[in-house]
Image (cartoon, rainbow, N blue to C red; front, top):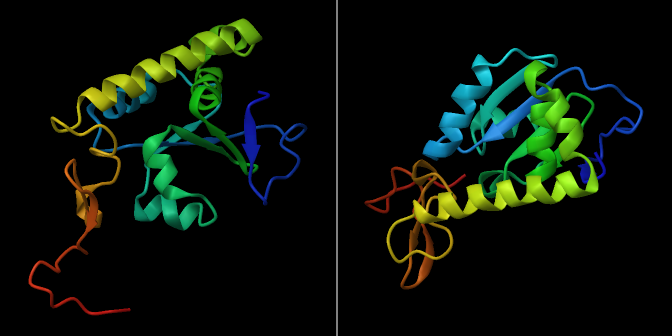
Length: 171
């Protein structure tokens, strides 16, 4: 996988075997939930753990990760600290599946990578079409339970959960 961005804790991702992968998915996206459900039914050569992106569990496991970006783009983290995003994340996830490893090898070639990138862009376009009407960017990129809301007229607004009356405690 040449399109791999490694974290600071990376243990030489090129030579360290991957024994487990954590797939961070948007739990509020119906397509993402469908793919998650499909992944858990597939025979796995490398165990996949599926964790909601931006969740407390994801933040505890990967404190150095940009969790906002994991809600916008599929992110997979290897047990040795490797971080895969976008098309590389899809390819490494397919690589972990017994019946789809040959496809992952084909997609890891230069021409296959273009096809994988096209699939990721198509999924992103579909997700974008699911956003509230008029929203061009943002839509459901951040879970509402975290206090973020997007208004296409004037952008993002933050109201911490439970603070509707303005009586939130500060940390």
